[in-house]
Length: 418
Image 1: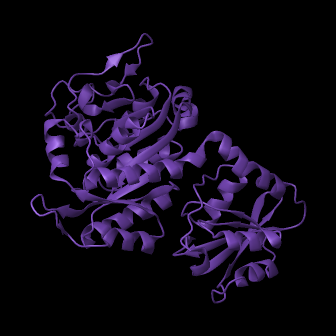
Image 2 (image 1 turned 180 degrees about the vertical axis):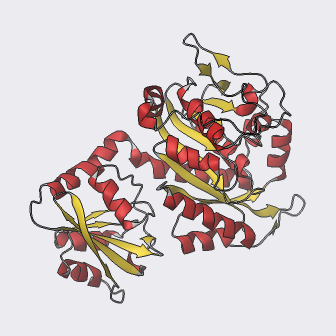
């Protein structure tokens, strides 16, 4: 990569970014070859974020998916050591870098694979970090991938921001531990994703408990239920709670991850649950599914002529609420000739069976964008001629509507808690 050696040890330097992604055909071509991009991030360090990224990549590869693992934790690139990777990246005939081949289904790229001294410090400012992340896609021959897992440093600094700006379609998996100080920081990470319009797949609570190797009793290392509490408070899904397993630590130290010789331990079982959740939540976002989800209803809006088309969105804390029947308020966005013309805010009536369909129907709503909804409610809305789109991400109402009108609204499965 252009900047990986020439700027090593620099404290500054000019902005080497190439500009928006649409100006880089090679970058766009590479991104088109990657079905799902997942940014693994955390609000603070020490929560096992890299371990989650590594095991997510290993687990998906073990299930037969073509997986890339990109380490953009430039100041602490631990991925190669956790996987026992040594040596430099190769080069193909077109002078593009080739990832390290970990196995038949997993390819890995890290800044450490480009450094002559593994212990040398990377001292870069934001523009160089952005340039590396862009070139780690455009100048690396990843080939077609089902998943690209991106391990970022803790916090909401340059690296996750560059991923949001450069890697279109990226979705976040946010890692936390149960104690309150970690949960406070993870709330900042959630708000970061919402501000940059990055969909959140969900939270992973790591080190949720420790199973005593002698008696088998589960011991709470920190506290209990913090991940679920934060997920409910911030209206994001909890994907999994992973218990602490000393062998995961030992495997990371020796470069032999636990999945090299998997067993039926609580950690492996919980990891299987995480993999299943991720698979289910990203599957509807295939390009052909996007066309089915976005285009037909958007066309109906565009063809509505002078009539105002009303889109209702259940909200909590200003973003879409997964609990449709228990939201704080509804935003009703007015759309005319494919453009947003205005919005209303309404406090819903008390939750009673069948009341919301009548109430929203009386308000003239044509479409509902929701997180999850029960089958009975879906039927009642259909009876009133109100279309419902479920599985939408927890974003602000105008962002959801703009993406919907452009045919770019990414949705997952209908997550209903009723």
